[in-house]
Image (cartoon, rainbow, N blue to C red):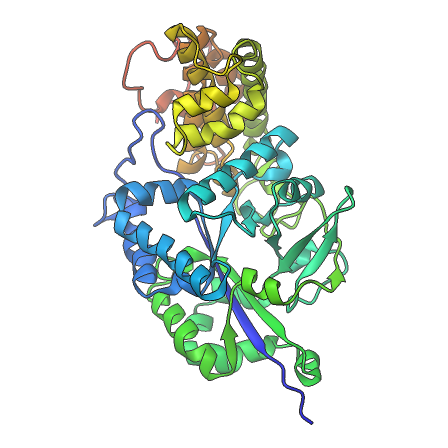
Length: 491
């Protein structure tokens, strides 16, 4: 008797864009490189998100959507946003599990965060997912698949069933055609899908791989089938994980490739299209893997790319990277200390309140409900100045989290839009502390940037970048900037 095996393919799209909004105006500035669109959010929506939503692709692939990007779509491309949400609902109705998974909120490199901030990022991402998709997530994508064991423990604390990693994050190698258990110090375990690194890398970076969906299904995927399993009649998963923006933005017309692949080519050549959540429902892990920690898909040196700098980034040695992170860490420690000092008399548990602040901030719970849960007396303070101070300090915590968005360290130089945006988020956090407490954290932060963050391709330091940021829309919401002894170069 011939044994019959099922070969399944899961395409995962990581849909994310660095947040572009000015934190003071909440507007995305015009970006000339995005012409004829006003900015890259609009451009990528037209090239990628809309055509994939129109084609129904989100219903059949596994995907995560960055919360900050989802927020922009909700308010600026509501029709596209609603079709993406509806796609997940259709998958739930068809399969009993959805196609979407959650995404840690600010695209932070979590192994570099402290335990409290890891919890906030994961909790915020789950709340965002629940309030958008109307259900709890089974899985969560972590930025750059950056991981350590503590991250996995916290995912488990929040009832996340699985996450996704690169195969080189596993010690001793793995078979990417099946899921694995990772044992945790708590005695629990969590599922990890390791995507096919060669297949995913080819799809991401080699144009010819994704030119023809029939050839991809007939020839390219075939080289990644585990034929021992196929001959033994065992089911297996061909796992492809890429940036979602590959499909139409990074590579024109690849939205059509994806449509043809999942709706026609893959089934025609014997591959059943599935999602991670659906495959896991029917194929629980049978093997255990151990992981390198900390590790990430896009750095061969642990997570040095986002701290010390390493050869994974092109360009000169990135001496500015530790300077930027250390400057932010020092600022965050001061904000955290002030947050606890000045909110503890009003909030039952300031850190738990911060975890649910994202739901108040985004309008998913009312201000009254927030105060009922976290106010010391189960209500908002009578004095408006007290409640305003708490709000400003919660906003300071929100923006200091945003300042760790990973894109700020990914590239070769500090004189780029991504580090500039992170510095602007830090400036917004400083502004909220100033408005709440009239305590000036700006001078020390700018001095740290001046001493430790210098571009290698322009005469600018991080301090010069700070001083060149657009002025805030109102006077008095930042302390006067202290004159420094050495004049910073002009732009």
